[in-house]
Image 1 (cartoon, one colour):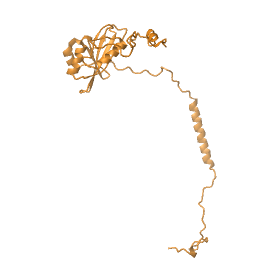
Image 2: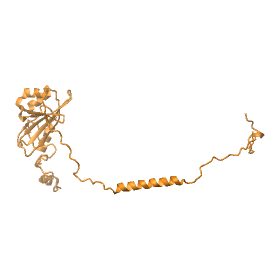
Image 3: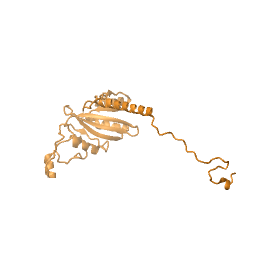
Image 4: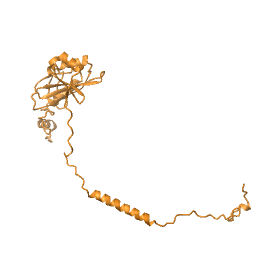
Length: 241
C-alpha cells in the first residue's frame, strides 16, 4: 500500500524516484498525403465524366398510347360438369349455354324460364343470396340487353351467374318472389336501362325523378345530355351541359 504523506507529495517525482512528468500522446503529423489526394481527385473526375456521359444520352420519351398492348383475356370456355348436367336434365332447352369465364360459371337461359330456374337454384341448390342484378346494353344486337343475376351460396361457398338475352321491349320475370333483395335492384335496372320486370310490386325509378325522360345507361343516351326541360322546370336553371 502506498502511504499518503511527504513521500507522495506532488513534487514532480514518483515515490520510486522517477520523473512523473506526463509525456503527450504522439499524433500523426498534419501533413497531406500527396499521393492519396491525387488518387481521390482522379477518381472524382472519372465519376463526373461518367455521369456527364450518361446525362448526354437522350432518354426515350413516353408517348401516350405507346405502351405495349395487354393480352386479351381468355375467351369463355364451354362448361360441362355434374352441376350443368343437372340443370340441363331439369330445364332442357331453357338452358341455352353453359360456360366458364375467368373462373366464373355462367348459364345463358331463356328469359321466360328465369324465375323457375331461380327457384331451383335457391331451394334445390342453396343459392340463397342474390348478390347483384344488372344489365348490359348491346344496341346493335337484335336482343339488345343482357340481364344478369349474380348468385351466391353461403353453405356451398360458390358463385354462379345467370344471364338472359332480351329484346328492348321484352318483359323479364321479377325475382322479388325469390329473393327480396331484387326489389331495389330491379328498380335500379328499370331506372337506368328501361327494362321492365313483370310482377314487380313497385316498379318505378329509384335514382332519377319519376318525370325524367330517358335511361342514362343505354348506349344511345348521350353522356352530356340531360333532361333540360325537367332541370329548367324543377331547378329553375338552364342545364350546364
